[in-house]
Image 1 (cartoon, rainbow, N blue to C red):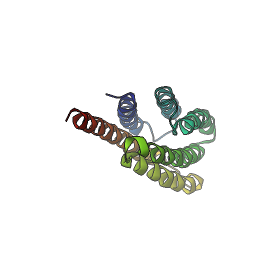
Image 2: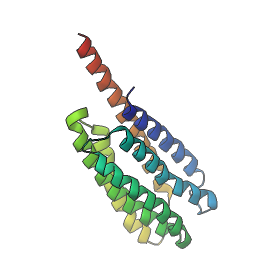
Image 3: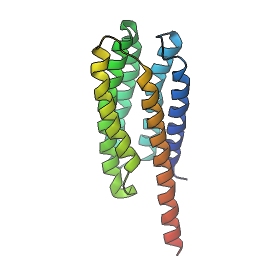
Image 4: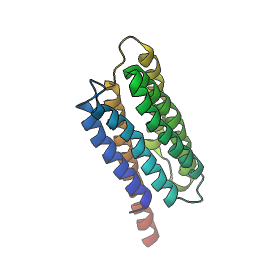
Length: 180
């Protein structure tokens, strides 16, 4: 399988596992909660770096480099925001979701020329922008909650797995067409 398939599959499975772990600790801002919050964008940094390394010279590379820096800054921002409370954490996460989602849509649009339509990535990026935008007013409200991040990350992980399946299907289809 292609490196991009592996990156998407592993990233998706890890996001789903992270979501399950976070579901158990998201009620209070404990050390475990903050550690998981910081870890989530670090996972994105690692996946983005792997993507950048494997896909040199592609149109999406610059955006993946940008996403790496954005996710690293978000990890630090989430750690610092935890000092101020749940609302600050949700606000930082929401900003990241909006910007990273827009970048994901752009990467998917750039990759469609080479890899075909990237529906899971397009949908995930679009939903990330929408979800992130909804987190911002909630973060500023009276009762911000991190519970919505459980669904967000599980859905994001699922979209990464679906993208991996789509990549594998396309690669298999191209092999069959080439053989025939």
